[in-house]
Length: 93
Image (cartoon, rainbow, N blue to C red; front, top):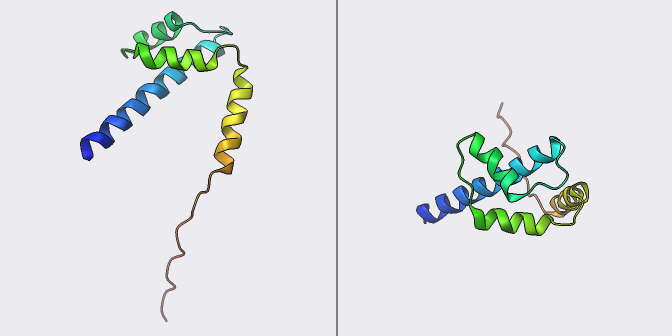
């Protein structure tokens, strides 16, 4: 179970690195970063991209306004339940 959790965590970090590189390219003025653009950014910091995940990301963003995508994601996150922890016990006299 521990190895599976580490693998999922590693995959999530790798995907987030693709997203971060994509956003950096856009911030740099590239309205529609390509796989080569994202790969170049990742290579510059010593990260090897996962081409399958990168192509999936680019495909999911193709033709979409990134601001709208981020707003939709934010709305989904706001709708997610987030249970809080119970209050701490009171101190005695």
